[in-house]
Length: 170
Image 1: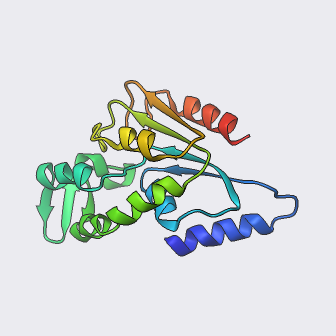
Image 2: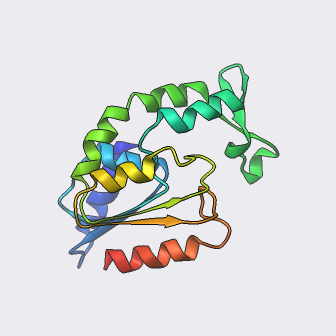
């Protein structure tokens, strides 16, 4: 995944006329960007529903989900194609926890960041992610808490996130 991120930044930087690169992330891809570290070609960042403290949101998936073999099934993993609860491998949770210190180290390196968090996020559950980013992101940064929406900013707030992000990236 880190190589994919690097490839996208490299490809974009080589495009004719590109002078600035803005990166928009959602959920774990924000953590991936923090792990990647500062890239001077990236001039602005939008973090949408980024987990910072991995142990907290995943404890409830493991606790509330149903474990079947090597997978945990949980209603939050549901997608149209799953026809019921979706599943993630147990190894997904243990692997992500190993990245915790790298995310903590990378967050303060990000520059010119706007971040969005729902106050009713069913995944992150207000477990301190928003506050951590507010405290550890260097200036300039903007923190936006959105009321009454899901981890995907439904119902009806996706356009707000897009509009605010576009204004920030200018």
